[in-house]
Length: 440
Image (tube, rainbow, N blue to C red; front, side, top):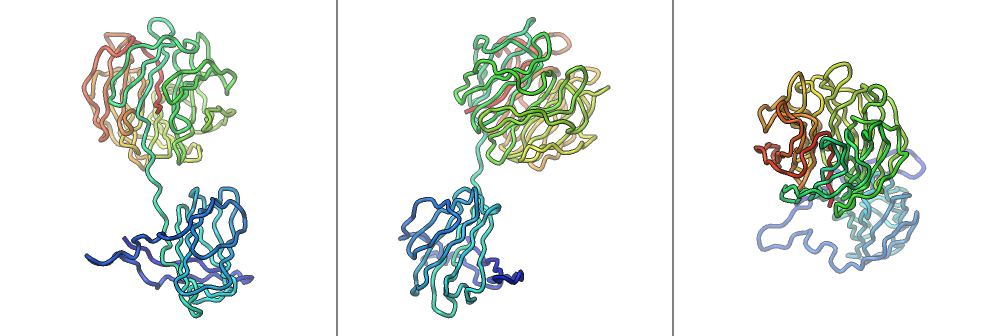
């Protein structure tokens, strides 16, 4: 492993900026039989309680977790030091990119510069290990490196819920981490169809809106054990034929968007990491209904396809802050009544739908949100189905309707490479226009 020493130095009171350390030492692991310069790099340090203040004084021999969630932190280094004294600082909550740390060298030099310079570090996930050398060079970083955020695995289990079995239902079916759909769980919450579902809180889900005989604003939270809670009403404009997906860097928030009231709409509602649905945000891309949505990139989402005055192939990306982008057009066959889910931890897939006839088309979504051309002939062509992820990195399409059978009880697994498997039949009560999400 290697890391290049480098810090941003601001001259106090001048506004000039200089880069120090750009031509500095490159730290590399030593050859066989020799110790790595990073081996036990924080060994022997005494780690202190998490620091959240805007100022602090560091002591040699200590390690400090610096939490800058709410504010920057100015750190005063010791006023005297001896060769070999060391201190380490680490970004506790990966927020230094927003609020960083400032080091005051307190009369001593820092990388050969005196304390008329202010040393700033401002990279999310950064770790900084400094060692005192002598009066000439003073404190020298031996590690100045951003630690990559560990990938957050997808949820292990899924749930299909609600829909139309010939009449409106509140039945749900759990999906195991092996993609096995369980038998029916009796109605939980108001029976309805044409609703949507997504994840929130990192390990929970939410069903929202739909048709109870008229447009509804009902939501039902799903616990991390797959238990559906009672109805919550009055959350955004009542509508049906909408879609929903997960977003945010921690995969802990969701968004409902588009749908139908007395016509197609272009509104959205964010879902907090506590499952609270926010007020309407309007004017997000072309108004449409009967679209689908899924996650991509580990922290973003995409809404795609649907119906305006005809089938469309529009997509709209969702940032990791929940902001919907303008339309992207011409991505795969225009269609409506399709479904979508994530796979491979950072990619997505749109599948099936209707365009003058039932479709078995799928379109993969890259981890950059790019929708691929059609892949044809994957499972029974059908529409008004739903989909969710399972097993952390796989997906499943289930239920729906085809030309000969108005209510289906079949499913198709999606591998972590985005390959759709052949039909599996007999998975819970046959139905259409249900919703799905993942949990756990």
